Figure 1 (tube, rainbow, N blue to C red):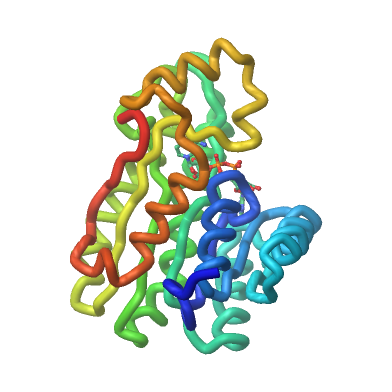
Figure 2: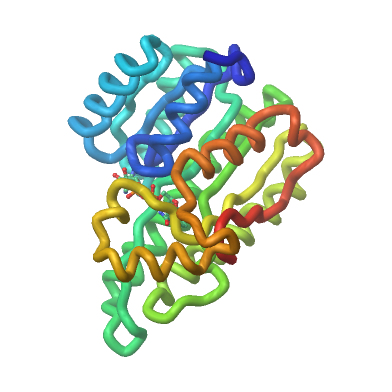
Length: 246
Ligand SMILES: NC(=O)c1ccc[n+]([C@@H]2O[C@H](COP(=O)([O-])OP(=O)(O)OC[C@H]3O[C@@H](n4cnc5c(N)ncnc54)[C@H](O)[C@@H]3O)[C@@H](O)[C@H]2O)c1
């Protein structure tokens, strides 16, 4: 166990997922109180119980809430503040794609993906930000994607992830005078438990796109998210940092 995030409180949305789960684990191992948010209560509870047992720690708090629901996000932020008094780090990992070529994409799939990936992040940032301003410190990290540069069949997801870059760059400028860093992590293909179920040949093709031609693991992304959450990155803001293929 390390101490790089000792006395810090972090909310990680999608925190029981592949990348969010790895970030939750590393932040908890580095001493942060980790509020692992995810949408499904049972899965979130199980994730926190299993990880707490694995790390032999008590600093992982499961919190089920839908980032698309502003009332639930507001309540989560208030509950965390009531219990711990501060929120130092927000990591926006909740996200999903629903792929289709434009001529086959339904309006509901467009709305779902924009609402979850872009508006969901906006919701969390908007409720946490006032308290970070008052604290005069904070770190906001959002998961964008290589898809922001354009991918066939992902017009909704690309648009949402490109939108997160705009959110990040604008907020970084607004937030700098309050000592708040705002950055994006932009992975290519990350070998999460969910994506590792993909057919071998598709998986291999994605791995081959990486400069090192080896898989990027969720733990690689977590290491970058740790750097962005500490004072080691205090002069880095408004940036999109690629990991894996770009
Ligand atoms: N895995 C990759 O290759 C990759 C690449 C680039 C970007 N990303 C991005 O990284 C983030 C994490 O991806 P992942 O691969 O770990 O996915 P994942 O599906 O393993 O994890 C996402 C988590 O978000 C949760 N979630 C979904 N909707 C939610 C909601 N409304 N409220 C709260 N939680 C919700 C899910 O339950 C899940 O646990 C996503 O934003 C994704 O777009 C992933």
